[in-house]
Length: 209
Image 1 (cartoon, helix red, strand yellow):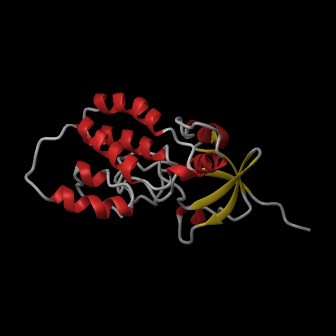
Image 2: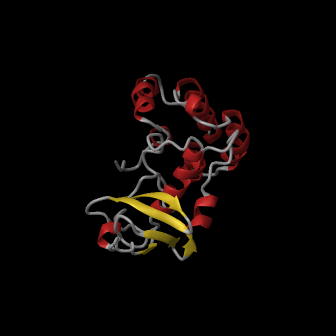
């Protein structure tokens, strides 16, 4: 859902559970001046206390704070902080935990239009969202995506891998590959599912004999 003119706190409500549990607390009490790094600290603590899937993840949450807090300190705007927070959420490689709205140009959270599995030399399409731009472009189940925006999809996926893992995790790799084909939010006022965003280059599936 797109939210017009969201506050910093609304932007950082990552999952439905956090939205529901944090909203009454945030609404109560007088307005106060909160720095961007304080927002980051509150988000990090809230997830540390309430995110219930750390046992299934290889994420080193303390390393996440060490890596991204300096970036939050350097953020000079809400959009700059939102990009940092989006990267923090991506460290959890959880499709259900992400920003309610992201700044223009930020990576989308998968799945978006396509679901893929890794298959050398690219990503094999396992599902295509109906009425999506991918379907309109003729992408079909079984196609092999080798490039995204003229870049090898493997290179794009490598750049989207979580950076704070204690150990390799196939689920994190799968998330990164699906994030690669999800593309980025447009930088123009065009519809989020319009043109000018991620352009996957599929190779049609071979007919089965």
